[in-house]
Length: 272
Image (tube, rainbow, N blue to C red; front, top):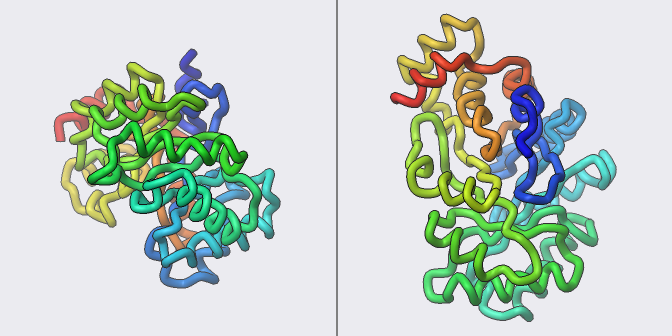
């Protein structure tokens, strides 16, 4: 059952779980100033952006350590924790457990909420990757599993390969300026009720320069950032992950939840 539009904009149902998570997660890729990042993540959680996305790859584990400090500060129950495992660690259930436990140690938790395969292994079948990855569920290291950077075909194979848990989310590059997933991936996600989480949704500031986005922003009196995020969150199956170390930018991002694009504006954005 799809939630009403306003609530769908703010929180999204995670796959078929019935659990609602923040429609905007806070990212931790490429952190430059740990003190600023710490303060921004804590404030984001206070504002209701209570999902944090990280990965063992980010800062060679330093990002997970930072998130661990945030979790210790705000309390484990206040955060929906997402982390990701490198594909080269999927070659056996033993390796998955080894690297999974290492990530959880850096995070300072006994269990994450969602563990993702960071991208598909080039030489292992999707079926074998998922089979090995499911050991994280067997050992209670995560509540849910998902994938990242999987194509529609790879997502379908992953879903059909999972025996012990649904694939609840696929994290992919997606923005109002980069819509490749809308034709190839989103139909599969909708068919199987898998949440799609868009990363790089602001195109590293690229959305700020697009004339059509700027025009709609001016007309509505809303920041371009909010227009770009609003476009994605309009879809009940789509959420986003945004990285910022700036409190002002964080407040701007959080304001996305306060309004919704009109059908005419959505149509204009779809034509970009």
